[in-house]
Structure formats: C-alpha cells, structure tokens
Image 1 (cartoon, each protein chain N blue to C red):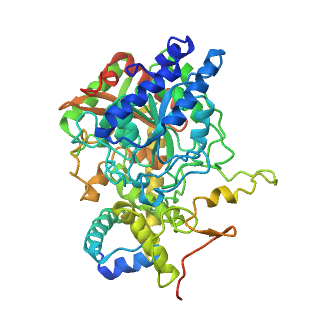
Image 2: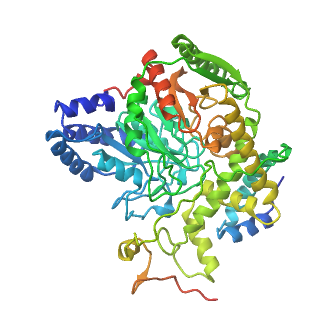
Image 3: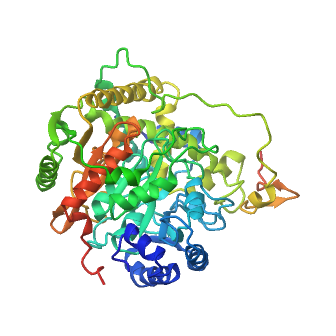
Length: 95
Length: 486
C-alpha cells in the first residue's frame, strides 16, 4: 500500500498540519509503511465481534447540577500568545 | 542515601535519622553531576524542591506525614504541574506553564513527596526510545549509547541512575513497562481507570494510564497507594476503593497459576531474553506457583490494532493545539485561518507526532473508517476476550516485556514500523485495560531485561505481591548501573 503526495496533502489539510516540500517524500514513504502494517487487520475474521471503544464497562456518571468551576480566565490566558480585553487574538488573516 | 529504597528512607525520615532537606540536597547534587550525560530531566525544580523538603521536615518533626513525606521524586513532563513548565517533550508546549496540578501531582504533593523536577520523554509520549523528545534523547545509564526506552525514558533513567527515589510515568502501549525493562527498574501500569488522568496531557484517552517507575515493587505500592482512587475530575477514573497495596505485599504466598503465552516466545524474541524469562518462571515455580502454557489467539494483531486506535484518538486529542489559546504559534502572516493552523502545527510538532496525527486522520477519514477504525475496535474486543478467557484458568500471565535489551541510539528512529514492533508484548494489556508490570530479571550483555506480569482488571495487589516475592528471591532489581553506585 503506498500513499502518494496528493494523498498526504489531502490528509494534511484535514489534519490542519503542514508538511514542507522537503519533508514530503519521507512522510509519504513512512506513512505507506504504517498503512501496510495496519492492513494486516484485514486478514482477521471479526464476524460477530462487537467494536470495543473503551476498556471499561461503565457509563458516564451524573453529578449534581451545581456550579463547581470559578472564572479563572486571567490565569489561563497567561499562556495565550496574544490577548486583548480578555479576548484571544489571532493574527490578521486575509480571507 | 541514594542507594536506599523509598520504603527504607521512609523509616529513616520518620525516625529523623535523616532529614528531607539533606535527602533533597543530596539528590539535587546528583542530578547536577549526572544529568548532563543522561538528559533525564527537562526541568529541575530546585527551589520548589527545597521548600517542599523544609515543609516535609516540619511535618515529620511533629510526628505526622505519610510514607512519602519528604521523599524526593520526579514527574514525567506529561503531568501538569502548577507554575512549572509542562512541555510533554514538545516544542508545541515549550512555553507552557501549567495553571493547575494534575490529580496525580496534587495527591503526591499532599502526601508530602518532594518534586525534584520533570523528566524527559518522547514527544507527546509517542515513541519507544525517548528519541522523539524536542529536548534531545535521554540516555540509558547502563550504556549511554543505548536508549533508556520510552516514552517514560527520562523517568526510567532518573530512577536507574539514582537521581530520584521514584518517578511517575504514563503507559499507553508500554511506555512505563518497556523503559523499566530497558533501564533495569520496576515499572507498574495499573488497571485503566485506577489512577486519574486529570491533568495528564492526553495522547490516546482509551489507553492512557498513569503509573510508577521505582526500584522495587514495594516502592511502587507506596506510590500507587497515594496516586490511585476515584476522582471527580476524571469520569473514567474508577469508583472502586483502593485496597491496601502495602499490606498485600506482606500477605503469605498463595500458590497461584501463572499462564505463559506460547506466542510471546516467537521468533522475534531474543534467545538470551527468552532464557532469562524461563529462569524467572522457575523462581516462581520454586515459590510454589504452577506454570501453565496458554495461547492468546490474536496477539499478533495487537500492534496493527494499536497503530489504528492510538493514532485515531491522538489525531482527535491533539487537534486542541491550535496556536491560539496556549502553546506554540507560528510567526508572520498567514493567507487564511487554515494556513495559520497548518503552519503553527507543522512547526510545533515533530516528525513522529506528525506521522501519528496523519495516520489517525487517514484511518478515520471517509471511506476508510470501517475498514480500519471499526475493524481495529472489533479486533480489540477479540484481544480483550482472549485475556478474559485465559484468566478463567490462570491468576497471572507472565512473559517478556520487550523482545530485546535496550537497542542503540539511532538504530530504529528512521524506521517507525520497526520501532512500533518493539511494543509487541506490552500492547495487549493496554488494549484490554489490564494492569501489568515489568520487573528486572537479569542481564544480557550487561543490559537489563524485564519480566512482564499481567493480571486481570483491578488485580494490582496480586501483581505487586508476585513481583515483591520475586524480588525477595532475586537481586536483579538491586543492581546499579556501573558508575552510578557512588
């Protein structure tokens, strides 16, 4: 199984992840190796198997409907690249 | 002081033969001497450590505290630590100062443990060698040209080199057990949900589990006692009360049946490693255990299943890194918002993280979801059922932790599939959410080898007890890497 440049570019757009032209050949070839590895899954007979999304057989628990979190935006926004008037700023984009 | 275990130091601290300040200063000094060569730490929190040690001494002087009060430990840099950089081994979080403590960190802090620093790791815990870290690889104290294992490589190296009494780690597919094996320490991955994931940077949420890297099973019991238990902040943390792990170690030996999967002894397993595992099994036989060969039908598919499920969850989890609210942001103007995200993420993530995100995106994308993701979830069910069936007849499963001793730096980093296959024996327990540990069981070419024990859900007492008894009969866990004794 091999992924070509176009396949990788499509994935990059879906994942919002840039791969530079210099990285492209290496990324495509290694992703192809990984896809070949995971293609082994097609050999298994899974008739009747229930997909397992999670190792625990539990349901989401409920809690009382009361406020437990306080407003901590000032502390949290200390990690933001740009903030103005309590708002997260993004750089100017030309759409 | 560094030659003692946590259990021994706890006695000395309690009887005031040694103070936490002396102990902490001693370990900080060791780190400053030794870590230049090992790169086990990303951040050293010297001032906080000394302040915490002072507070611990006050507590101990008044006859209070826990067995961990005053004990210097290290946290894998995946755990959020309030006011301290939490990088997850990535450029993406190189500037991230956590505004809060992970539950694991908060509980150990409350118990009085002293934090020496944050340990090196594969970027976002994606790797088996610690080589994908943005901060450069940690080295194996047994041979600095070898990898310490990963992703909790810094924690393993720090404990092996006696730069910390114990350390936290996380295990998604083997990231505690494999570095423990490579570095000659005891690594415990509890049952999925036994320890809260709150404040642990997410990689694959249905697999991630926090645990310990320590010198002995007894030390692991002491740390897990504090770390485990229900947490309101994590809805997947199990509600079950935590048994007394330390008491379980002291219970008398009961004759158990240990299952040994024939397919763990495949052609991929180094013959010297295989011999050490067989020797370890005969130690259990001498203790009175019955050894029974078993077969885990779908084990050969555990690596491909994992490399669908984990990247799929990772691609979703890591979408939060957008360069807007926290973390790395690309400089300069972008044409549109998509380009801004792409550049930020393209520059902020390293090669292995990018591969996992792209793999995850591929297996979840339209047209491939059923063939890969759904199929992987079905086989995950089959793998889990194999274990359940096995545990109808046996109490524990034993086998190798890794196919070989530590491999050389650079040996596998350019071949991801070879790197992934290194986790063949550890991934099964992760997929099934089972508790498992690795304990040292010998040396091959002067490099440590680990014995893996896997138990049914919530069988940590049985697992820790088996490892503890094994460690009473053998001395492999007490070996110090040459040059790190003094």
